[in-house]
Amino acid sequence: MNLNGKVFQVAATAPGGVVSSQTRLHLQQRGSRVLGRYSGGTIERGYLVGQVSGSLLYFRYAQREVDGHIHGGHSSCDLHYLPDGRLRLNEHFTWETRSGTGTNLFDEIPT
Image (spheres, helix red, strand yellow):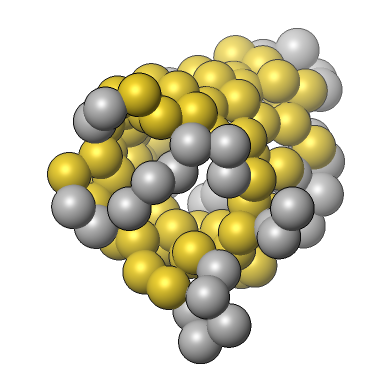
């Protein structure tokens, strides 16, 4: 799967998550390396660095929230296509700077 240039929005979030329907995730891919930036809602600015292998994406993330706090963690994602051909990221996250784990769903925004 090629994630280069893809933009995603949150379709669902876990109770311990801070992303929202206002959050947008922009991805770039070079080979298996993936870089991302995201913002929206309570997230002022966030970045992720990871790698993709087949339909799996692994990354670490760090974000500055609008209250000034900086938080981060790591995630593993299952990637699959929705019936309409868009990609869905099924993210399983674990915070490292606060307690909590959960699952977020990100759906590709057509460009």
